[in-house]
Structure formats: C-alpha cells, structure tokens
Length: 256
Ligand code: ADP
Image (cartoon, rainbow, N blue to C red; front, side, top):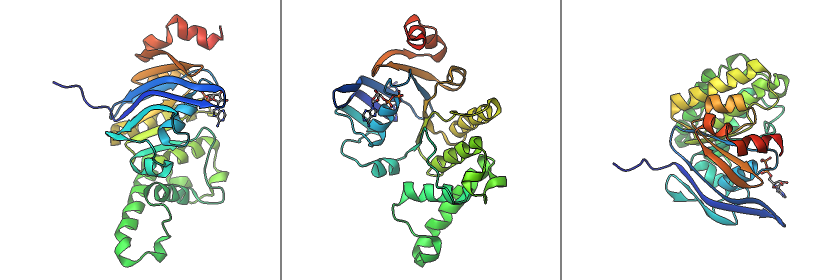
C-alpha cells in the first residue's frame, strides 16, 4: 500500500533578508489531522517559515505544495482561500468590534475579499451569508464564547482574546491551521483550555495543525511530530518526547 499523501509539503525552503539567511533548507510534511510542532530559540526562523507557507514572504528557493498544488506566485489571500488559516503571535483582532463580528469578518476575509454586510446582499447571495453565520455560531458554541459574543473584543481577558483569534481562524473551515504561539502570555488555566480546544478542533474537524510554541510541556502534550530549528536550520525531527531529549536540542535551548 502507498503512504498517504501529505496535505502540506515544504521542500528545501530558503529565505534571506538582506545578508541574513533566515531559512537555509527547511523541509516539512504535514498530514491531514496531524499536529506538527515547530520549535526553536528566538530568531531561529519559525515565523519566517510560516510567512513562506502563507505567501507573506515567499521563499527564495524551494517549493511549497498544499493539497497537491504548488503555491508559488500566489498572494496570501489566495493561499488562505485554499484552506490555510493562521493566528498571529501578537493579537490581530479588530478593536471596537464585538467578538461575534470579529469572527464573522474573519470568515469573510478568508472566503471572499470585499464581501458586504448581509443587508446589501442581493437575494441570490443570501444563502451564502446564512451559511457563514451558521458556521460562526457553531464555532462560538464549540469554543464556549457564548457569554462574551456581544462584548467589544478589547474588554475581555487576554486568554479569551486568543480564543477569539482561534475562533476566527476556525470559522474559515481551514484544512490547515497555523498557530503562532497561541499560549503566549496565558496563565496555566488558560493554557490548559487552549490545549484542549486545539486537540478538540483537530478531532472534530480533522484539521491539520502547524503549532509554533515555546512551552515545551505544551509541545510534547499536543504534537504528533516535532521539528527543531536553530539559525534557520533543522537540527532534529521526529517523535516529540524523543526529540526534546536529544543533546543537540538541549544544548540549543541552553544557548551552548
Ligand atoms: P522566530 O520566529 O524563530 O523567532 P523569525 O522567523 O521571526 O524567528 O526570524 C528569523 C530571522 O530572520 C531573525 O534574525 C529575524 O531578525 C529575521 N527576520 C525575520 N523577518 C524579517 C524581515 N521582515 N526583515 C528582516 N529580517 C527579518
């Protein structure tokens, strides 16, 4: 029998900024439903890798394939609409808008750039708007955001704001979810909730996840496979528990 086809394949990705080689030759394969961890010290190239996949900073060399399609030359919004959603290290929510509207706008941004509010839709477009709202309601229930749905997003606690960001990404019904430090700044309880929701999202929707995270307890608990970068180069890949015990990985984290 043949091996299952990966959903995302990054093949020998390179990216420089001026004279700095931020990614030297990084390869990743992520399968449907897999939670893949990407870790490494600050400045090792993790966010650059995400930007290469999502088209924000296209690679200088190497290939990104998603669902069998070469992403070369595609703009970020086109890549998003193929089924890749991301959250950002620093929150990127719309202040002054409610939790509900943040999630709804997120869905529209991913699905159809320039979409108008429901009021202005011609009659033939309304079923699409009804479907958007149904998905958003499902995600609000799933992530237990009912109590804050009508609150302005900036008044709710940081941990819940991060959950709204996850909701906005899930509302696009992505096949691949890229989470850039989803637990940053969270207390222990918020981290545990977020970990549970990531696992549940994978289980409920079969979403593949690329997880960038520096809390090692979270990484080993959540990921099926782990890649460690230092200075833009892969130094270890495999089973998370086994990988984090390797001397080269321990040394990288101790700064030796
Ligand atoms: P990480 O996410 O692992 O902390 P980054 O991918 O953000 O690392 O950064 C990797 C290296 O690339 C760093 O040295 C960083 O300064 C550099 N870098 C990232 N993005 C840019 C950019 N837009 N312009 C210049 N240098 C960048």
